[in-house]
Length: 393
Image (cartoon, rainbow, N blue to C red; front, side, top):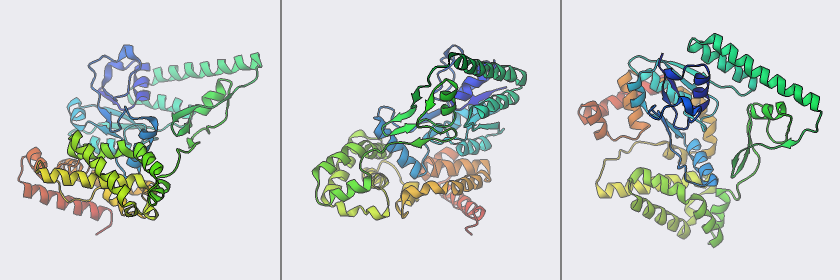
């Protein structure tokens, strides 16, 4: 059996069940157990977030991407296709932490021989044990999975027995997943604290929670810009400059041009802060939209590529009364992805490359070795099919 494990815990489970030799692809952040992961094993995912940014900057980039419906982790579809896995193990509990389950299923269904997709979503120790059993069943190692679960449960029980015998005071413990802003650890972590003899003071089993703010909101900073508050301008620049630069760099692929876009955008906001309307949404998504539009103008003036006038997630979010409310549209997004999955495999790839990866019509024509006008026709018909599937006529 050929297995692709798309997040670290899945890789660890497969190795713990003695099936490391079945792994043909793992996630970019899988690094344990190192003895079983040879250097040449393909990494089939990547993060879209700049790992060199500060915790606060990463948090803002994550929130903006989440608001706009953009993926934080990308699956290498071409590598997955080449590896031809029989089983893909993914997760469905956190779109911020790893590849989105919906993205995995779309790519899996587009393969010549679609693999089985096993999604793990444990939010407690008990469910984690069950996930080990599910992986064991999927790779035909159920007896070994039961042995592993029994061994882990014995360790937990022995730890509890030692605590009872010791009869010592329980320390109060706060476990943080992120430092700026502070996020407490949830899901199974509070259970682990309790089983280890501590008293969790922040986390709640089965859910995570933000426990501290990150300073003034974007709306507050935007309002402070109107009377030309220099400190607000400086704080805004320090807070969002990396976001604006990243968006511009993604479009221009030119660091100097991206720096110019960022400089001009913040200068415009200083000169005409009233252009940002806090009643319509948050400042960071607005800056992202403005940066993208300015970057597109730069690329067009250079005449280096063809950028189509297609609506993007950023532009849709900009028209929303409150871009942050788009988080409530998760079910609609799932419906959309299901409808894309009903297209023929080639049409799925075409739509994903055009609207998910941002390929131009010329790039698509070269990829599929077909005229540009034919590509446009295929896209138009595909979008009509998707609209009909969604009941939009």
